[in-house]
Length: 127
Image (cartoon, rainbow, N blue to C red; front, side, top):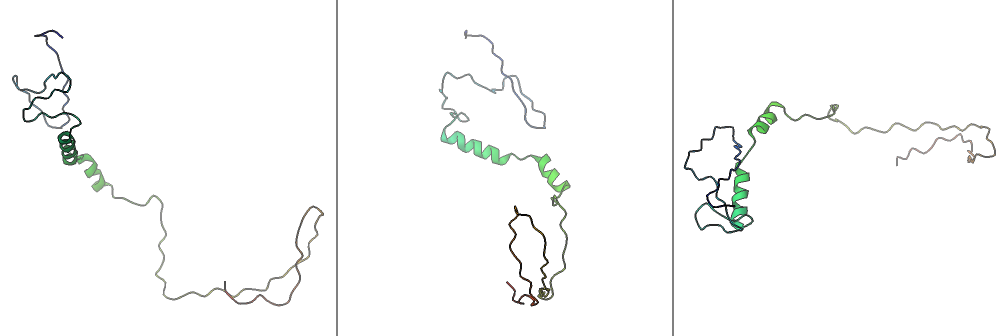
């Protein structure tokens, strides 16, 4: 780097507003290593003050477009949910019916337990 040589930097405007840079306005400074001048407005990257500034800067920025989208498209369930009436009483289980067994033919390779025929209905005890 020669003394008096011109170097160019690329500046990106991240705002939606127009940014005007005047001819003698200081927008950047070329530093050797991590030498930061003791002038207000300059801090070392990675320092405690830089991290505090970065946190404040990120908290202050919001995406207005995403806030507008939330208002336009309210959150709705992805799946329709049926609506049920509010229960007015405790429902009873239906009485168990008579279980009947019937004889079936089985082959020798099947293992089916025997079912004893019974004329009695199962007990009315609920589990």
